[in-house]
Each structure stands twice: as structure tokens, then as C-alpha cells.
Image (cartoon, rainbow, N blue to C red; front, top):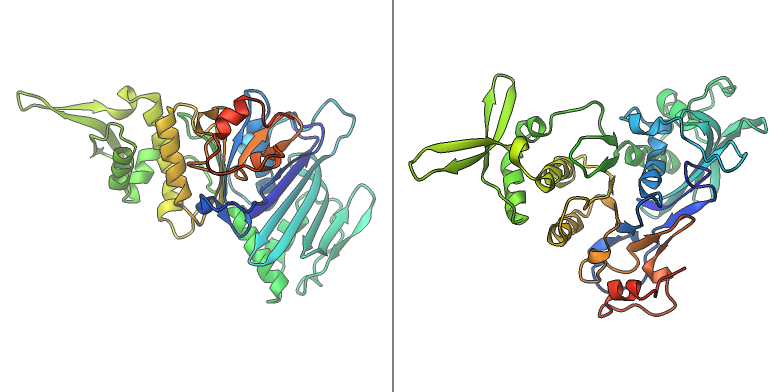
Length: 376
């Protein structure tokens, strides 16, 4: 799982900004924590503080290591222009079983790497630096015959190894395989009424075609019932397309069918998009490893926001990071202080690290926030 992430010189982040997911010793909402780290994290920040860009930064790793969808990341506005530094720097820390993998790299553009380092349990396994002309070092059995002169190749050394080496079955090779698998299953999406996303899949699919073809339509209806929103929806197949509609029985025994996407609310559209992605985590054997949902509650009232968080808390095998600007759901009843983060221009801190006061379950942390208890 992801333990921490840092980025420097990326878009609006001139200085290094770090999300540290290390958990504290709270005795409530334990389903939000796994293996000593926040498995469910909620980031608060004002509009324009950089929540979306931070999510894109977290997902940058998929450009290096996967062939999954990355179109939203390939933006010319890549580095911060407040400094002459041309290198954008990233650092990820992951935990697999009891081992720690640290992956560091720098780029001058989304697809132009200039250095990479990989450490497993503090041991440097892979390193190279095109800036200082340091030679490529790979300490993995099974890579001895790989061509080491890669200065003219701008792809990731890790992806190069993944694609071309038959690694011996060592503990480090197994950890590297877990690392590749985790990154391959990372997903970012905006909880708006569209299907823009990063990672996990390739190509664009019709939401309801996918839900119906995977036999999850009744699960979707149950999902709406649980959310206490209109759930009288059905579908018919016309040719190769599915028509999804609200179904109404009138007093004159005539059944009326009203197109779902034409007449449903924006909130229901975003719930549909949410379910489309959550079905992978709820029902599939190979679920996403990490789901970053930007502005997850953009079109929800507080009750629906809490419903969504409670659904997500039940999905133990997938790590979630959500962003919001609504402090109405800043509550120990549904989360905990070490899983609630405040984002400012230059830093992200958990509530538990933003106050010298011991935060207990009985505290009204939203009220404390509004009173300035967590101010920088």
C-alpha cells in the first residue's frame, strides 16, 4: 500500500509537498487504517489550493510503469514556472507485507526521465542519473545480460526491466512484482458527470453497458436504494445499446419510461459514475489497489457524502484517497484525525499532526477547525 508521497516543482507546487499516511494510535474507526497507515484518507482544501494537481502527481507513476490510460497527465503545464529548476521530482513509499519500497525519480517532461532510484528495505536496487552521467546500476539476479547503456532511451529503467528481464525468484523480485502490480491497478477519477480518469483501464467504455454486461445492474439498483435516492430504474436492449430509464406505473395502468440520463439529477449521475468504478473494488478479484477520487462529493448533500464514505470504509482491500472542500463531513463519527488531512499551498498535514491537543472521539473536530485549532 502507499505509505507516503512527495512531489516538488510540479505544476503549482514549487516546494516539496508530502502526504504522510502514517497512522496514529486511535481506537475508533479502525477500518480506515491498515498495516499502520491510512487506508482511507480524506483531504480538505479550499478551491484552487491544488487538490486536483496533487492527485495527478500521485498518478504520475503510471506514465513510467504502465500502459494504462494517462491522457489527463500528459499536460504541457508540467513543471512549476516560479523557479529555474527544470526537474520535477517524485518520491513514493510503499509497504508490501513487512517490506518497504521507495521509488524516486525526476523528469523534465511527463515522458522524459532523467534519474531513477529504487530502494527495497533501505538497500539501493536500481539507480541511474542522466544529469550526472552516473552508470546504470541494477542489483537484481536475472538482469545481467540487459544492455546497460540506455542514455538514448527515455523510458523508465523499471519498465525496461519489467518488459525484458526474466528475474530470478528472489524475495526482492517478488516485492518488485507486487510493486508493479499495485501501480498497474491505481486509479484516479473525478466524481463529476463524465468518465475522465487516469490508470487502471485502457480506452473509454459506456457506463451502463459495462454495469449490465458484468451483471451488476441489480447491485447498482441496490446501491441507489441504500443511498435513499430514486431507484425505480430498468433497462432494455435495443440493438447493441442498452436504454436505461425510470419506470412509472400510472393510474390508468399505462407504464411510462423516462430516459435516465436525460432526467436524472446531477447527483444521481455522479453516483452512477461512482458505482461504475466501485464495482471493480466491490466485486472483481483484481480490484483497484488505490482509488483517488477528486472532489468526491461535488454534487452530494452531506447525507450522501457520509453514505459514500461508509460504503468505501467497507472495502478493505482497496486504498482510497478522497478530496473535498466541504468541512461538513469532518467528523470522528465517520473518520478519524489521522485519516483527515488539511491541504495548504505548501503542505498537507493530518488533523492529528495539526494540533498539540490530544484529539479524542468525543471532540467536535469540525467545530475545532472553524475555531482555528488546526491553523498553520
